[in-house]
Structures are given as C-alpha cells and as structure tokens.
Image 1 (cartoon, rainbow, N blue to C red):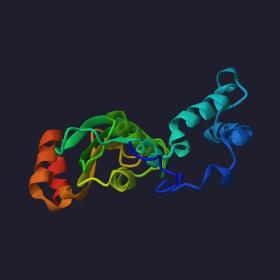
Image 2 (image 1 turned 180 degrees about the horizontal axis):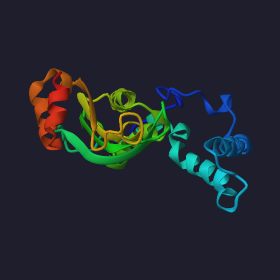
Image 3 (image 1 turned 90 degrees about the vertical axis):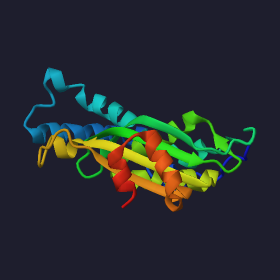
Image 4 (image 1 turned 45 degrees about the horizontal axis):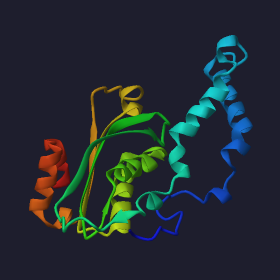
Length: 219
C-alpha cells in the first residue's frame, strides 16, 4: 500500500479552503442572492411557494458542487501491489456523472469511460468513480474535465498508460441557445501507451464500444 498523498490542492484548480469563506459563512449571502434572482425572473420570493426556495437552492448547490471539497489525489492515494503480476488493461466504463456548465450553470449529464495499464500498482475500482465525481461536481467544461481525470490518474498511479473518454449531453445547448436536443459531445485523452500504441488504443475503444469515440481519439 502506498503512502497517503500529502499535497491537498494539486491539480484542483481551486484555492485552498482556508483562502475562501466556508459555505456556512456564505449561506445567508447565497440565499439573499437567490431571492434577487427570483425577483429578477419576475416572481415574488415572499409568496408561499417560494419562501423556502433560497434555502433549498443553497442545499442543492452544496450537493451539486461538493467536488470543491474533495481532493482528487487523495482519492487515489491508497493503492495495492499484490496483484499476482496482473498487467492487462483495467477499464471502468459507463460511469454516470452530473456536472454543470461553467458558462451557464446548467447540467451536463453523461458517462465516463476510464482505463489504465497498471505499473505494479492498482487502485480500488470505486476510487475511479469517485475521481470522476470529484471533478464533475464542479463548474466545468467537458474538455477540461477529461484532461483532469486522465492527468490525475497518470500522476498518482504512474501507470504504463491512461485512457479517458467522456460522452455527455449539455443542457446549455439543448434548453437554450440553439435548442438542439439529442446531441452528445465526446472528448478523450490518451496518455502513455494509449497514445503511442495503436493496438492498446483499439483495445480500449473496442471494450468501450463507441465508434464515435474511436474517430475522435484518433484525430
């Protein structure tokens, strides 16, 4: 088992918690902001149906954006080396995630496929899912999230290779703007053998079973 990671803010793209107010300290301000939005939308935040809405929205945001309180490196810090010499690909596919567009603060809902070729160390499969959520539960763009997942997995485990594919529907596109429903965006990041060895990349894409991802990953 490896030693715990000591750096709590590597690759988080957010300042340490000590450098920003806690959610509790900012709760009243956040609820007041929701009341302003309700008035701006044309409704009365004092009416019965909306009296408790500001508090509910803040509680929901605590859940939506809990990734800011999580350290992706620490999630992967506990690894295992007793694997009987296993050196084949490890893939966790169809990891459902919910994120929020940093431009419009509306949902991004999709699936992540995460794979790596171990280099003597493996991590519990639930940690791969938690890694996805740690980055998804933030304001995001899909391209950045894809890179964050792959880079963190590569930095902590130092495997032979890493492959990450994200497929998602963006409500900033389906519920506003161009109003194009049924459209999914696919992004990928291939590192190490997944980038350099076509056979490794093909194996991953075959397991994932996504022809669109295959075309994007090879561009």
